Every structure is written in structure tokens, then in C-alpha cells.
Image (cartoon, rainbow, N blue to C red):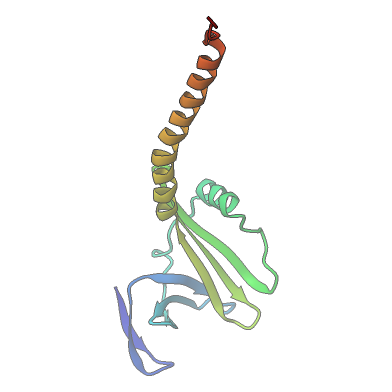
Length: 150
């Protein structure tokens, strides 16, 4: 939990997660977070707090979600992500636009993985049963004896 006095708004700010680390052209560093819909930034040296970049993971996640290399209207456009054991991952896309606003999108892939895994567990066996039923019916038709007339 991040808690500090934001001098720009004159109020105490509490955030649960940092959403961006910003370094200005004058080398000033800020840690920014979402405090109930308001983006609030604290100045300081946060270089040790910045998560390590897993380039291979980010490249894979960008491919899955179709995230482009560049974004129109962006001054800065960066990606952060982690892959946990290959099954669960998270990707954050951060954009600093020309007007100086920070925008981000955070995607936690484990929720998507849970849905697709559930679909595989349900639809896989159902599809297998349908295929077996079709093969059985086809086998019955091929091996059926004609009815004899008396």
C-alpha cells in the first residue's frame, strides 16, 4: 500500500499498486498510482522499485493481444509484464500522450486462462463423445445386414 501527501492536491493519497514510474526530461523521477480514479504521483528515486522486464514474456503477450509496436499520439509507449510458470501472466501497457497524461491498461491473463481451461475441460470431452457417436453410427450403417423378406 502506497500512502503519502500529494502536494498538488493537498490531500493524503492511498494506493494499493503503482501503475507507472515516470522519469522527466530533467531526470526527476515519479511513482504514480491510481487513487480512486485520480492519478497521483510522488517524486523520488524509485529505480529499485521498477520491475524487471521479461522481454520474451512481453513479446508473447503482445502477440496474443495484438498490441502494436507504436501508438499514434504517444510521446512514450512502454510495456511491462510477468509470466508465472507459463500459465499465468500479466501485461501492463503504459502510454504518455502528447498532452502529458498517463494512460495504462492492465491485463491479468490468469482470468482468461481460467475461462479457456474451463472451456477445454467441458467442450473437449463433449466433442470427443460426439465424434465417437458419429463413428459408431457410421460403423452401424456399414455393417448392418439387409432385412430379408419372407
